[in-house]
Amino acid sequence: MTRTISVIAGTSVTLATGGTIPNLLCLEGYCNGVANTQYFLQLHVIAPASLMSTTTVPLRSWQVLGSDGFTFNKNDIGLQLANVPVPAGEVGTGYYIVLSSTDAVYTTPGITADINVDIEEFELELAGTTQVTGNLAGGLLQIVADSVNATNKLVQLQITNTLAAGAFVQLFAKSPVVSDVPLVQLPYSDSGVDGLVPLNGVVTWKFGSLGKSLYSQDANGTNHNGIFVGLSATSGVFDGTGTGSVVALYK
Image 1 (cartoon, rainbow, N blue to C red):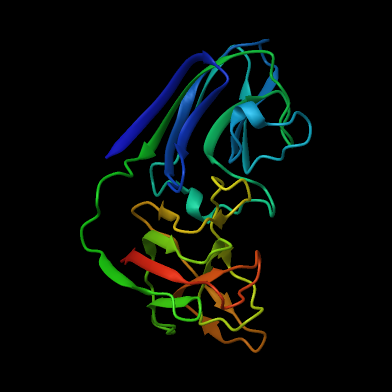
Image 2 (image 1 turned 180 degrees about the horizontal axis):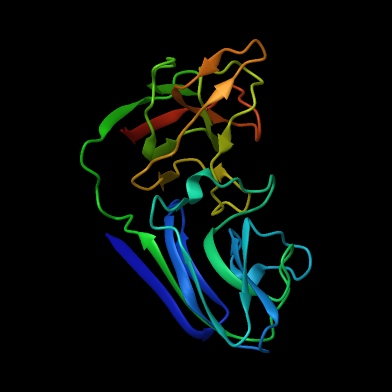
């Protein structure tokens, strides 16, 4: 099932906020403005009202032409936003499609567009998933064991943080040791610090029906395909100090 978000003669649409990370299926509409002039639809994690002209780099950018229609169809598997990297240090509040007059950075467009976006329905519970619950011992919980045969994907993750100073939620493909850098540090911004979940904060991330894949390779060529959730007081590295609980779904 899909959900459609639309705006007529506007400059942006909000795909999802909070911990929801949607799967984008189709982007289509009509661009106003000067005929045959390039404009761009950009994907951002910063709300349109907070975008800084000429300094904010999009996660993706699609060219559209003035006085013309556009269609970007990704219905085969969709664009899995869970696997689109977010620039380090960028405080994300959700996922947004924004009209810009330049490609590489955001620039106020001075025109409008009709924008229709189809995303995968994210509020339906998926069949065939396995649930794992547990406490974070030493700031870590194994969801799926590290195995060369593991092909599992993380579908949903709920974290309850009980670390007084707040903590960062991190994902690994193998059991980390202190000072390891995570594959992903999940975005969250209600605390005002990107990724910091405050004391007693309960946050849920959803990764779409295809789920989020985790994979890493050591310097000696050893592959890792597990799913491990870490909670750390330190941004960008695992420090093993986090405390809290996890409810995870994988398939």
